[in-house]
Length: 295
View 1 (cartoon, rainbow, N blue to C red):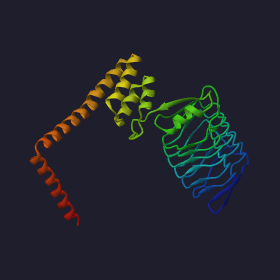
View 2 (tube, one colour):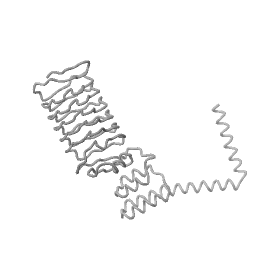
View 3 (cartoon, rainbow, N blue to C red):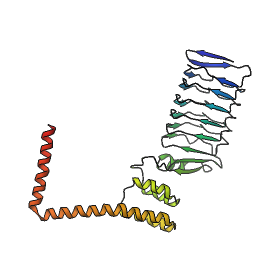
View 4 (cartoon, helix red, strand yellow):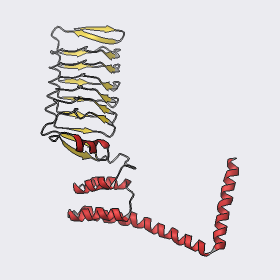
């Protein structure tokens, strides 16, 4: 085996029937088409020094069954592993932020794929024709995805976070054979993202676990919580109904009680003008002292 190297870039390789390739340390870039059509290779080892994998770098490596991408790589380029038809699994490191168009197209033996939280974009046809792939989870980090990234076939399930725009768009736009289901991450901060509509979706699915997670971040009036309780009662889900009633008593009623107490204090102050004047004077003195201190 002979590697063609120029300035730390692997330009190509000449094989003599070898089935394994170990890329030398110090290589920082695997160039475009470097291993293209190396059909005899079953295994390739990439060193940690590699930061970039070029377009079609491993395209048509039809016998390749395993390869590890080091966490120094930031992107999976255009057609990088296209038509690696014997590849059964591949681990994408947390360093990768984009998966390019056609990156894993026609990897027909690929049975599992974990997309890390670092990935922000997935290109056209990235996983199209991966016939053995039955499901894939899209993390919250993904903000751009092509609707042709996955082919439209029975038995394939796309999982996307319930509170992401991706989930709502997928439900509306993906082709009918692709099933779209939601996920909820107990470690994710959903502040400002939980709506009544999403909570109703969770209740309709009888998903008590997801409801408990999302309600941590939900602020609403008694009227809206009563709507959720009514939905739960209609579904005859006793566990969910009991949880919602407890949540209402612990949150909504406490807020209303605090509001009532504040109103009572205000009414008492207005009924006693001298005390109100003293309170107002105290606030002005405090503000003046703060201003002088700041100056």
